[in-house]
Amino acid sequence: MNTTWLAILGTAAGCYGLKLLGLSVPTGLLDRPVVRRFAALAPVALLAALTALQTFGQGAHGLVLDARAAGLAAAGVAVWRRAPFLVVVVLAVAVAALVRAVG
Image 1 (cartoon, rainbow, N blue to C red):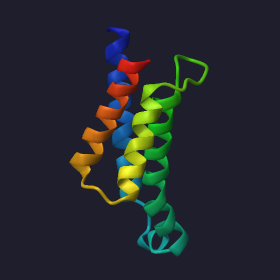
Image 2 (cartoon, helix red, strand yellow; image 1 turned 180 degrees about the vertical axis):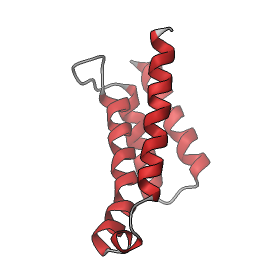
Image 3 (cartoon, helix red, strand yellow; image 1 turned 120 degrees about the vertical axis):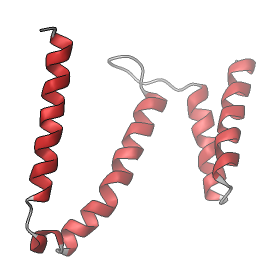
Image 4 (cartoon, rainbow, N blue to C red; image 1 turned 30 degrees about the vertical axis):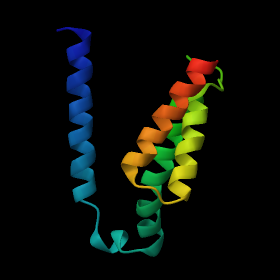
């Protein structure tokens, strides 16, 4: 069997096992305030880390500051000013394209 298919089957089995493990957690544990707070904040932290990695990451090692950073900054300002989601995305794309065109 191909190595790729072994990886896919292993990942699928792991995901199924984690889902089964999550369903077997006692309800009393899930009702604790610390667990609730973690469950509320963990997705935000993971999304922020992914955004930072995709914006400032370059290859296996190193950081880069380019047009993506300018687009992210523009999107951050638009979110801070409570702009609609579509406006945030269009503004970020426009700023990044402008920075790439000028630089």
